[in-house]
Length: 123
Image 1: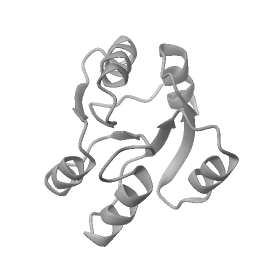
Image 2: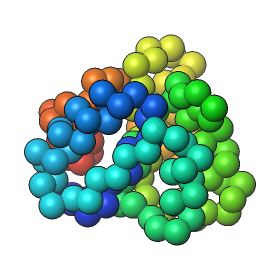
Image 3: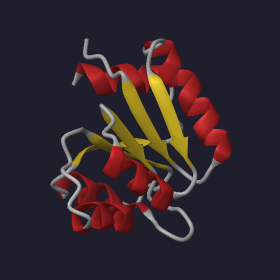
C-alpha cells in the first residue's frame, strides 16, 4: 500500500473538506492534509511545495477544476504528484475529460470515504 505524507484537498465545500479529511486520516493517520477552499490559493501553495497527492473538485466558484489544471500548467509548476478529480458530477463528458487529461490519474465520485481512499491507493 502506498503512503502519502502530504495531501492537498481543493474544494469549495467545507463539509466535504471535513469529511474527506476524516476519511484520509483513517487511512493515512500521519499525513499532513492541507485543505483549500480557494483554488487560486492552492495553486500559489503548489508553486512553493509539492504534495504527494492532490484531490481536486471540478465545480467551484471563481476558478473551477479545469481552469485550475490549466493554470497549474501555465505557471510552469512541474506536476510530479498524482491528481484525482473528486466530484459530484456524473456528466460523462467530465469523466471522459478527466480520464484523458495528462495530469489526472482518475475520477472519484463524491462522497469520498475510506473505501474509495483505499481503492485509490491500491490502484
